Every structure is written in C-alpha cells, then in structure tokens.
Length: 455
Image (cartoon, rainbow, N blue to C red; front, side, top):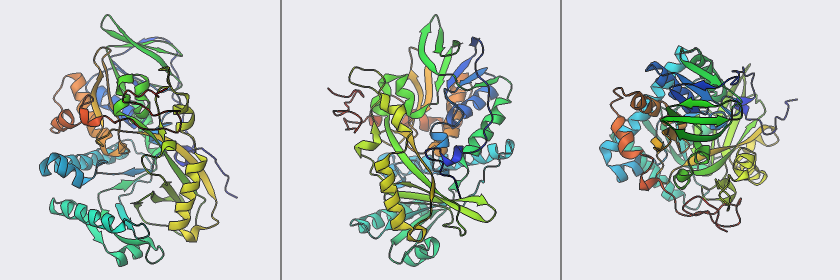
C-alpha cells in the first residue's frame, strides 16, 4: 500500500544530496540568501560575470516555494494578457508575454546543460470555464476576449468549445463551458529540477552553496554588509534576497508590497490510467498529471480558495513589530480547513477518483504584489540589498529573465534588451505594488498598510 507522506511535498519526497554548511567566516562579492530557483539563477549569472558568490540556505535547497509549487512553467504574468493591455498598452503587454517565452527558453537550456532528469514536457496550459458557477457566462466572455487578444498578437493559443473541452478533460458532461490552451506552457518535476540546478551551479568556479545557515541579521558598516548567521558571519559589498515571501523579515518596509498567501496542494496515489494531459486551471482549482513510471500516473491538485480568505493570508509581524510566528510555522503547513475544500473540489471535478488515497498534502507560501508583477532591483539602498521577489505565483515566468537583468546590473555590464521592462514596471518602490489593509485569520485585527497587525 502507498505510504501516506503527510505534509512532505511530493516534489521533495526524493533522495536529495547535501551541500555542506558554513564552517568559517567568509567574504565574497555577493551574498545570496535563499537557495531556491531565484537564488540559484542569480548566482549563475553573477558568477558568469566574474563575481564570487555565496548562497546561504536556512534549511535545504528548494524547501521554500521552489519545491512546493504546481510544477508548471507559465509564460504569462499573473495579471493576464487583457489586464496588461488595458494597463500598459498592447506593445508593452506583448513584450511582457514574450519575456515568458524567453524565460522558458532559458529553463530548457539549463535542463540540457546540467542534464537534469526532471520529466520536462511542453503540453500547454488549459484554462477552463466551469459551467456550475453562477458567473460562468462572464468568465466565458473574459476567457474568449483573452484568447482573441493573444491570437491577434501572434501567440500560440487555441479555443476549446464545450465538446472539445469534454474530449480533453473526460469530465462529466456539462462540467465546463469552454476553455483556451496556451501551447507554450510546460511542466516538470520541481524537486528534481531545483536539485539538479543546484548541483550544476555549485560546480561553477566562484560559487559556494551552503545549507543549514540561517541569517539572523543584516547590517552595513564601512562599505561592507555583514550577515550574522547561526554559523559564522559572511561579509559582502552586495546582498541579494531570494527568499520571496520571507523577504520582509529582512526588509520590513516591503511588507506592504508583498502579501504572503498560503497555497495548498494534494497528490493522489498512483493511478492505472492517465487522469489528464497537461496542466489545467479553473475557478477554485488547478491540476496536472505526474508520470510515476511503469505506466502509472498521479494527479496533483491545488487551489480550493479565494484570494482574500483570511486563513490563507499571513502577517509578517505581530502587534509589537516582531516576526509573526505563524508565518513560517503555519505558512508551509497543510491547513485542515483548506484541505477539506480541496477534497471537495477534487470530488466535484474528478468523481471517478472517489476512494483513491491522497498520499501527499502540503502548503506553501507565495508572495503577491497588488499589481501582479514582481519586485526586481534595489530593496534597501542603505544596506545594499537587492532581489527578485514577490513573484506572484509565477516564479517560472520571471526568475531567469529577472536574474539576467539584475545580475548584469549588479556587475556593471550591459544587460538584456528587456531591461527597461523591469526598470519601468517592476521597481520595488512603485506605488501600484502596494496593498491596502487586509484581514488575516492569524491576527486578532486587520493588518495595516505597514504590515503590522493592528491592536
């Protein structure tokens, strides 16, 4: 019988190599906090430009969002194409979407360069409109408008009517009204990818990767930033953050622009038949198949929440201004209430899987800006802290291109042709990224504009 792995993410339920820890004080050109995909890719770019880099990971490689996600590669940013067209104009929206294609190209290149066996596929992402929801007609109209804009601008998309959707999903008749395929999207095994990436990057001359090193404080003096850790101090002229939702713990002023939201995921026991082909998303749910080998498949299923549900929102700080205990304690945990909602959605959309055991249940923190675009650049000028953060659930859309841009900028070399997009639209201090007050179930009062729980 398949073992229930509880809250262990499926992607991390594999053999993982150790990368050693920090045994003595060191000084480097750039210190990177976090060994997820952002930290690793920034190290790769910086080393290519000649920098000596140390990556400090508080736990193990990929323990954050990089090993707790859906395992998909989306080309489109979080707001959607139509929203970007309305906000920034058609030309800028097209360039932002093309950035996703470039990011995907860079990911494919790394998979080949480091020979990462991560079950990479490019089957597309299918966005579905559920016909069992009262607002389905409005959703269908919005999906069709998105499709028309993307098609007119030359992107590889296809429209699905109700019959075509039924053939692709094998769902009960009437479950979905219509949908759209973005053929450029892909998927992979997140854990094997990030571990393989770390193994390849750790071999690059000038890169040192340390696990089990938790940074306690970051302070600047005499032109050098010192990272006080629970092991040994690390000195560097520049610091880069790759910790996404946990970034405000180092730069508190960013909390207003980085709302921490907890997602939830489940994975079934192996199945004798393939449950779907590709990756799917719809209201309250998203899913994809996982090749388990030997002609067996699993279904990964996530969602089950609305964006503003208080039990999915976490304050960074308590009323006294200290780090809120719930952020790391509960942010990566499986929520019983949320998992029940996932089970309900799974039963609704996949009734044929009734009685199939769930072997993995987990949570993961994401970080969202109010405008759905990441924060890229200088996060704290006084301490010379930089980062690629607030990835809005689209880490595999932005991480590589943002690393190319920021890495070149920090090393004083010419950057990519799309650098202006990050400068103009992803500046960390932009007003459009900031959230108004919001309510969290993990605080007794609303969380204010400054990220503090109000007494």
